[in-house]
Amino acid sequence: MKMRRMGCAAAAVLVLLFVFLGLQMAGCGKETVTEKGEASPSENTAAGTEIVTEEASKETSEAEENRLYLNRLSAKEYVTLGEYKGLTAQGEKAEVTQEMVEESISYVLASDVQKVEITDRDVVQEGDIADISYEGKKDGVAFEGGTAANYHLAIGSGSFIEGFEEGLVGVKVGDTVDLDLTFPEGYPSEALAGADVVFTVTVHRILEEQIPELTDDYVKTLGIEGVTNTEEYRDYARRSIEEANEESFVYDIQLQLISQTVENATVSEPPLELVNHYQAVTRQQMESQAYYSGMDLETFLGAYYGLTMEAFEEEMAAGAVETAKQALVCKRIAETEGIQVTDAELAEHVATIYGDAGVGSVEEFFAHVDREEYRDSLLIEEVLWFLYDNAVITE
Image (cartoon, rainbow, N blue to C red; front, side):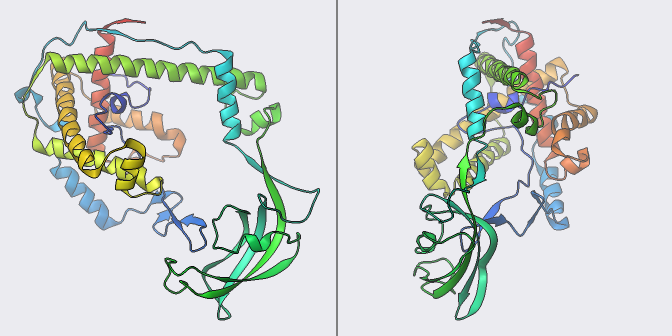
C-alpha cells in the first residue's frame, strides 16, 4: 500500500474538540527566560532536541508495551459496520486570485522583518532597537543572568526592569553608561528582589526593523528549489495556496465521510483505556499550546476558547469517547478491507515526511515518537483515504 503524502489527514479529521491524533516529534526545544527577559535554551535541550535518558527511554518502552493500541485490538467486538462505500459528499475549492497571491507574499515578507543599522544619527531614541552589551552588578559583584553581549533591545518595549530602557534614551553610539537601578520587590529571583544594582551598558549600534522588498536577490535567499526570481516565486506562492485549498477540500470531505460512516455503524462503549488515552492527548495538546502562549492552562482556555476548567473537562471527556468510537470504526474498516501499515511502510513514511527535517534514521525518529501510536495514526489516515476513494464526491 502506497502511503499518501498529504499532511496528517487523520489528525485533522478525527478532531473532537481539540484532539489531534497526528503525532509531532517529541523534543521541540523549550525556552526559558533569564532574569533580564532574554530567551535562552533550556538546560535539558541540545540542538532543539530533548535529551532522552536511558531511564526515561525504559519507562517509555514499558508504557508502550502496556498501552492499548488500535493495531493490537480487534474492533469486531465493538463495531458493526453499516454503509461506508459509495457515500456522497460535497465540498468547495476556493478560486486562487492574484490578490490572494499578493496577500500571501506580503504576509511572508512581513514575517521576515530584518534589522538594519541606522546611520544618519547616532543617539538612541524611543522606539529604536539598541545593539548593546551590559553587565549588572550587585554590591560590586556581577550577578548571574545580568550580563550579555550584542543584545538587541527594543527601547520602550518594557522587557527589562524599570529604568533600564529609559536610561539609554539620549546615549550616543560608542558610549558607555552606568545605570543605577532597583529590581522590583516581587522579582522572581529572591537574591535580586528589591536589590539595588548597577548596570554598565555600552551602545554599539542603533537598528530599525524593515520589511524586505520582493526582489530576485531576496527570493534567492529563501533557498526554495527551482525558485530564483520574483516571477517563479509568485508561481510558487500560487501553487502553495492551491495545495492548501486542496488539503482543506480533502479534510472537509473526509470529515463528512467519517461522520456518515460512524452514524451508519453500531458502536458499543469503547474501551476505557482508549478513551483515557485520547483524553490525555487532548490535555497534553492544550497544555502545550498554553505553555507556548506564556499562560497556564486555565487562563489559556478562558482567553482563547471562552472555557472554564470545568467546562473543558466535560467537553474533553465527551470528545474522547467520540474520538475513540471514530477510531474503532476506522479500525474495523481496516480489518474488513485488509488495510494495514507494515514496518516497511512505516519507515517509508517517516523517511518521506521527515527526511528533509534532518531525521537521520527511522530508529532515531522513534526514539522520540511512540512507534505504535504513529502506526495507528497512519492506519486511520489510510482508512480515510479508502473512504475518500470509494465515495461519490462533487465540487
